[in-house]
Structure formats: structure tokens, C-alpha cells
Length: 350
Image (cartoon, rainbow, N blue to C red; front, side):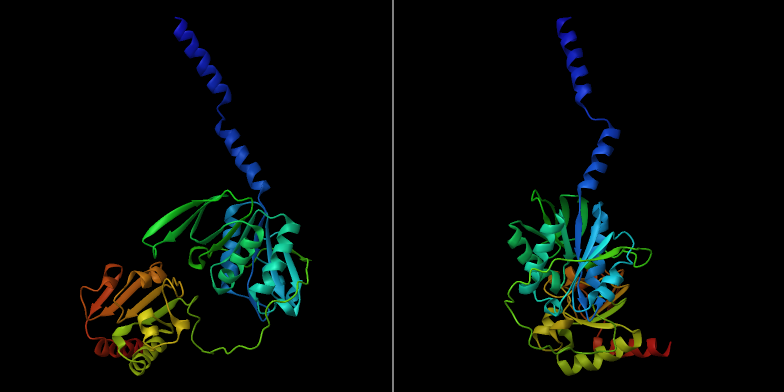
């Protein structure tokens, strides 16, 4: 009897201190109000780049107010105004200076840290491209926090999902740092709406830190084809094409017939068949087009890591046991030097 009474008292005490579902929802709502996210945007010649869209989309998934940050020459009237139109963005912080136009990370990092401290942001997000991968590690070091790289999902304000081992395993990471510095995979966050927003544009703080590097020049390759990272159709060639001459002879007509961007495997790039800017894979670009057509690519895990999120994967290879066929939706076993020109001609005539 005494034992029963003690059990009753214990249950009553436990019930008293067990939060209800409503209380939990309230706590989550209160936590969201404490969050403050800064989406670091990449711009070139006053136009936002694709990595900026993924940074905004990921920031909106966190909840709480979202502020966009952009710096460069004349950005208030161009890229800042463009960012202000994104639905869900509450404010755009802009710093106008020629010193930040090219996004040199050594110069950009002190600028970003100054504005992070001023705004007291809890989360800093950028796309996992060349801009974000070179800038945010420096920012994390200056803030004395650890960076969480290349995330593909957000589970909560401190828990994130990212692929490891070339995408063969998925890791859930929980960060206890007061400021979370994060880069996001562009193919995983694409649902930001570029219209419907009316954010205010304000001036950011410029520390005018001494420049550590100087921009000298750049050489850009121009092409009428779609950009590889954002194209809806991609055709990629591998080592099976045997030479640069054959790569150009086979892949260019195929890409033209489909209106596709051209990519390449690392083996093809290392062999000199294609420029390294065309490399798709773990150490190249991540793509997720509506159609990905691989030609003469065996399908090493490093390559699959960069294209496995494609909506439809098609493969042409003479080896029926090639690993690429394990992930392909459509496969054709045959001599690519015969099959690809025939395919290109039929697509073009259709």
C-alpha cells in the first residue's frame, strides 16, 4: 500500500514536469524567433549567381528572420535589389566597394565577420561553390567556430545532414557552436521564390581592412551552351572517347542536338580530353539536371557523387557490367562511336 502511494506521487510529479505537446510547439516557436540567419550571396557584374539561390532557400528552411548579404561595385541598384525581391528575405545588407567586386576571400572574410558581429547572426549560410568554399572556412576561423560543409538537408537549427565518402554514407551533424557557419549543396536547395518579396536594402559596415591580395586578371571561356551547373540537360564524356579530337567530334553534335551542356569525367579531364571546368564529380561540379546522359563513363563512385541526383540518368557504354548501369534509368550497351552519332542524328531530325 505504501509502495502504491509512492508510485502515485512519483507519477504525479513526473506529469507535472513533463512538457505538453503545446508547450513543446511554443518552445520551438520561441527558438525560431531567436534565430537570425545571414545568407551570403555571390554576385558577378551585378547579377546574383546560382549559389545565392541555394543560400537563400536553405536560410528560409531554418526559420526565423533571414538577411541577405552582398558586396561589390554598385550592388545596391543591381544584385541587392534583385535579392530584395526573394520571398521570405526580410532585409538585404549591401556594401558598395570595388575592393569586394571579385569576391577575393582574403579581403571578403574580414568584411563579412564585421557584419556578422554587428548583426549578431546565429547562422551564416553560403552555397558550396568556389565562392563559398574559399570564403566561409576563413570566416569560421576568424569566429573560432567549426564549419559544417556541403549539407543536403536541415533537421533543426543545430542538426544538419551531409554526404561523406563520395556520397556512399550520410552523416547527421549536430553543432554546439554559438554561430553556425554552413555551406549548402546547390542541387539540394532550389525552392527559393525570386518574386513576391519586398525587403529593405541597408548599408553594411566596411572595416576597410588592408587588402591581403590583389586582383590581376581573368580569362573566361564563353559559350552559347547552357551553364553546366544549372543546365536542365547534360551530356558527359569519359575516357572511353580515347582522345580530345574524338571527344569533340562525338560530344559536341550530341550536345547541340539536345540543347545540352557538356560535362566530363575526371578521367577524361586528366587525360586532356576536356577542360577541368567541365568536370562532374566529387572533386568537380555537382549537377542535377532533368536529363544526364553519360557516354563512355564507367561510373566510379567519385563521378556518381556529382550526378546521382539527376532526374533521369541515361548511359551508353560497351561494357554491360559498367557500374554506371546500376544507377542509370536507361542504358544502351554498344560502341559509342557508332551509337552516339546515330542518336544525335535522330534527335536532330526529330
